[in-house]
Length: 498
Image: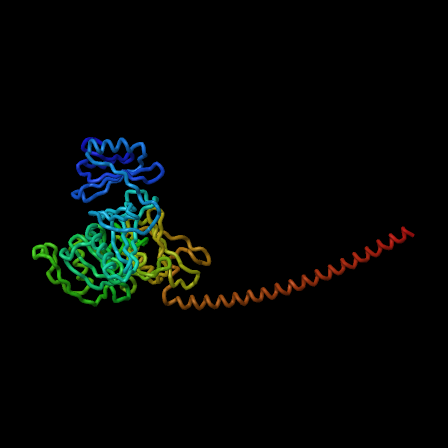
């Protein structure tokens, strides 16, 4: 601290946080534990009512700090008692841009509006506040990510409206939602696969807002790093996908991708609320009409300022852009794009070809027909993604495509008998003409083996019976000899006594 400034420097990183003494509105000295104190400073409204906290003080530091604040900063350092009874019942109110929760008149917690990521009402009497995750902190440490307030039902409509009013204040002050005046376009009843539900999408100048039945989400355009438009194989639907740099969160669930689904034949008209010169600059029209997925794609491409990735050169045997397969227990579609793999829908997986070390084809079962195969992608860092239950007819188109992209294909030798986990060679994929013959021969050989096994079992049983009979005869002979010896020994003993 100096005459006009106070601040803090990180010894590890060297970063400095510095503030002006003239911006101080209130300074408090809070007792937080056994000989543990916190210096809490509230800054002026032109500093957005920011609260600065310094922890790690002791009781012996109070006198020196109070003298400096009163004599140099001309601010009183007040002792404040913290609520510590563990009660969860209290009062909530807004103090500038800060949300204050008090218990029995004592401060319980305070939260700045700029720390809020989302504000939702999961139910009529619940208010959920999701906080921004600090990426600079050690991710192994515990962080407060969500706070929920519950207002008991009283039957008073005014009391219930107070919770909604608090929500609107937090939404406005935190900036997680744009006002209606900033809205450029509005899309109604848009079906989302991730997160699942139907949402109203409010498209603004700098962000999107998704209004759902229970949850609202806000996505800044700067957080969108990629966009995809892919048709679903053998389906009348088209998926529009947003890849996010900062994942959306709903409780403990995070969503790094947003997947919208549109009917390929559905049409829609959307009015764009922009001036003529800006419409021309962005390549838009006052009224966008056409197929829904095309209208949405044009809007997002113009406002986000990024290109939309579409399928490229790959075509399956059915002339589709994607392959039906499974990842773990989830079925979906794999799209080999020109520069990356994309799997949808749960989970959404994006793999750049530059990160691929090798790929490997393998069987997924011990069946001799080989109707399906597995496809494993190994990436840098030792990670692997396995896609199973792929139709064997997709093998050659996929191999030719990967070879054209220069991706290393790693195959193992096929041991006798095949089986699960064995690498798949081209010869292991018979054509449709000889598939039935293979199945027929396989079935015939199985029946012959069963017959042979059955005969061998009969012979073994006969041999075991003969062996058991011979063993019984030997045992009876030995027992007779033993009895004779015992009788003879008894007679000898009697003779000696006599």
